[in-house]
Length: 144
Image (cartoon, rainbow, N blue to C red):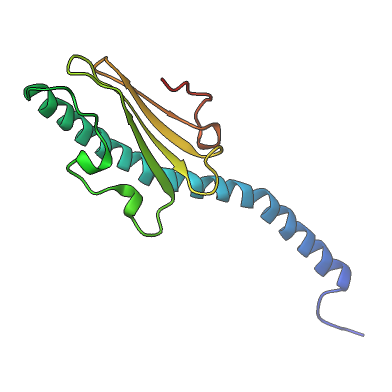
């Protein structure tokens, strides 16, 4: 007899090979997706930084005490109001008229301990950008 087709064993071997390939590729795919989502958070942190810098320079030129930056005092839309956003954003501003001291943090909704990004500015002209280990960074970041 001359039958054409595949045997059950051959089909099972092919399915096992496909399952192995999928099981190794899926975790890497998930990491790539999270890193892509973090790119949006990184851009939003940069926008917040620019706005806070402008706020600080405006406050320095005014008389009276320094008024800390918050989302309602900045000249941009609050990124926490974006529909279907992936990250929650927070600002901690302890600046004075003499020194910029602030932290901007973005934490992944549903997984804030695994996926976060942070900008820390403490007086110097250049601050420090850090991210969680799951996004390719190092932990922990000490908040001031």
